[in-house]
Length: 341
Image (cartoon, rainbow, N blue to C red; front, side, top):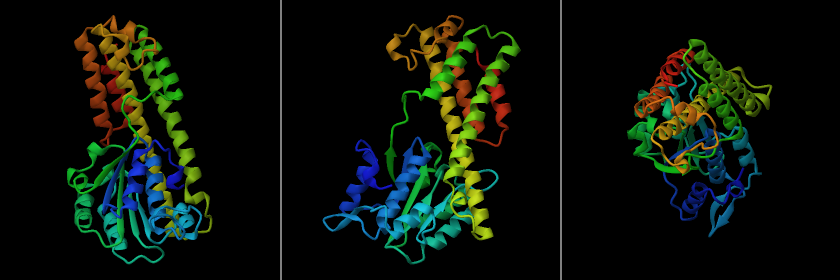
């Protein structure tokens, strides 16, 4: 993928090209967006452009990759000697200090196949404090001809010491965007069930089943997608150490993407609960985020505004809890039982 393949409406990609054209590439970037897959694609395209053998130029300066030369193909397949990726690998799905130390060692070596050394840290919000601290000096004083790119879908969870040392670029807004068809169908079903009287424990557990089924479907789709795109599917005869590394990266990538999509689904639920709260206040329909989802008004008639508002706090607390090592099903069960419907 080249910069020319990104939408003309994507200002982040255009900003990077302008920086390349003016010779003002930042030493460290923090790419922020709603989908890690998109951020990885942009980071990979920037890495290609910096190492491309036949780049598109403006005023003699490379501003896009050819996406076809040997270097571009190697970067596409994840086996370029000057491009290094770091992903959460441990059982707790965090980036450990040993991974960062190895990255620092690699990034300080001179480029062997291109003009730049590029380091890409996926899910920078998963950096352990020790790993983040170990990376600070490199962020402040990066090696010559190096590019450091950090990716996150949760910038608030990236340490301020890291954020302050990077140039932040946003790729796509994540606020109040329209529901995808799968999310809309799921929310309509959830809302319809919730609108029925929820006084019995059995009713709450039916809602729990709807949520868990959706999460299970999401994880299966993520596993299928990332497994299909893994280098494990492209290269069968690889050394044991490299295969194990790719396997760890795949497992960590699946978990990270699942956590992101789970958080997004709970955010959809929170936005729906916000509509219920607005209904209790008699707010005009144009302020609702999901006016086409039935059930919210019926639930609102059973609640006082303070009860509806408390539901928003419940989902927010559940989101925070899920960022710990708590058992997922238990955290969701407690959250659903606390909701006033």
